[in-house]
Image (cartoon, rainbow, N blue to C red):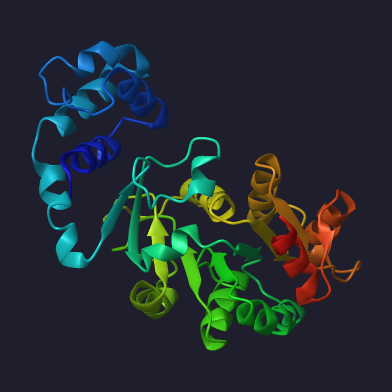
Amino acid sequence: MDEFTRRLTHLQQCRGIGWKTIYHIIKVNPTLSDLYEQDFLQHFSSLFKSSQLFNTALFDLHTDTILNKISLYDQHHINLITIADECYPQRLKETFQPPWVLYAKGKISLLNHNDCLAVVGSRQATTYGQKAIKCLFPKLISEKVVIVSGLAAGIDTIAHETAIKEGGQTIAIIAGGFFNIYPKENTSLAEHIMKDHLLLSEYAPDSKPARWQFPQRNRIISGISKATLVVQAKRRSGSLITASTALNEGRDVFAIPGDITDPAYEGTNEIIQKGAKLIIRAEDILEELRYN
């Protein structure tokens, strides 16, 4: 681990320091060579919402607690990928407020695979949603499409498991850190993905998943992907947040149509009305991925 990676990771884990604060710090000191100077953080005190937050960040920066944790990551085969690294996914760099640091376990090469497809949907997967995935995935996998999802219950889990079963590759992006897999029933699936595929997070390994991290996580799911497929979603759904993020970044959004009398498909049907491409076969997705 080089010194810049260590310092940026330390800074990112300091309580009270957010994306914008790091942005302003790096603008002033791109290599972070002055980070541990006693009065360095004082120059950015106006960026903190309170003196308490500033003092907390200052404490974290000038004690060894976080650095000691970082020094143990190699033992757990945790890779640190900063926004300055060549392997950092180019598509993610082009999004709004990309993570400064990614924590990764598994096949790093998947990050810049040309045909990454985000697959999102309800935690209450219907039989129809499962059948749709099992219908579309064999052809997608045979064409080397990498399936990206969020390891959540329901559609996410089915997407990861089907990709693996079909002999493909998958990337799981989680809220929280590697030492606190959520949901717990997906721990074995996560361990398999860490070993043979790729598990990714923007949160330190000992972070516990918080409610606000899930919509934040969604921007990475769509951000590293060439396009997003919504399999099944209610009108108000986290899956639609992912789709909206993809649209805002100029990425393609696909959706599988559902029963117009069932609330479980109101979200997917609605985004088709708004311009998402209606998907009925794998070729509908492949022609867009290859065209773009």
